[in-house]
Length: 207
Image (tube, rainbow, N blue to C red):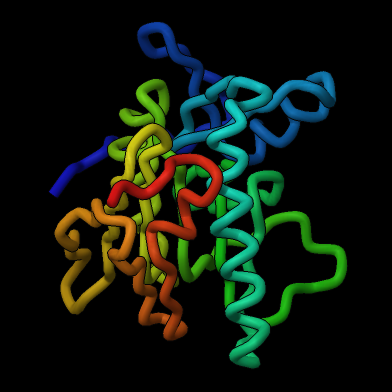
């Protein structure tokens, strides 16, 4: 199991190597002074400036997954709903504040909520540039969220989906899905989606 060193609990910013670290409260103060067109995340206390904008393939995959989840969950009468890319996932104990590509949360949210800390499913679309962060740095933090049932990693540039499921005692990684007819299954709310639909209008399925 990967172990990620937790940040020191202090309200004094510290510099370690090339990175800046701070607690979530300080990070929220930092954001107040940043231009609205900048995107920042806090990963285990590490301050990360994110790239604004993404390739169209990324946006299309996120849209496909979000739309399928929204329609599927509504059709089932589920109280679970997806959020995409601009909704905060925050956790003070982990000094975590980030924008997963897709979040699914079950149950109602307060009318004025701008963040949540109890996701059921998290989805990240992975590129070469984000692989280290999505597969390692974020995952070490995500798997410490008690509510999380599934973590889904979707490769942007090829048909490949990896799923981590919470089971008794920890998380289990399923065999990689690589065929258009393979099904992404999320037993937390009895949802299935073929890879062909995840990659619709992005990567044409091969015969």
